[in-house]
Length: 90
Image 1 (cartoon, rainbow, N blue to C red):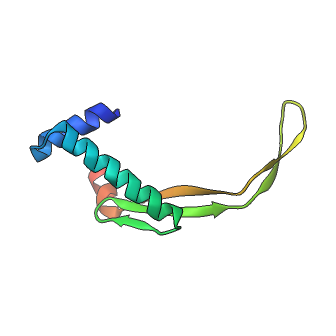
Image 2: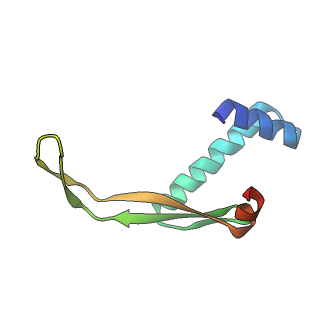
């Protein structure tokens, strides 16, 4: 599902305009980006948990030419599905 389809589906279910839902989703993404940047866990009831984790720097060897490369440290966002959502998907 692409962004347009998501916006139109949510707008239909909520009885709102596409512009309102688009602003809402942009605001939600902005809040999630800010809070995860501060290493806070975000819990959405009946959906799941978004948790940022730090990955340490590491040395990688390129299989094509055998050269070593240093991969810098970074923050990745992990998602763990709630039991309610898991049960609905089964």
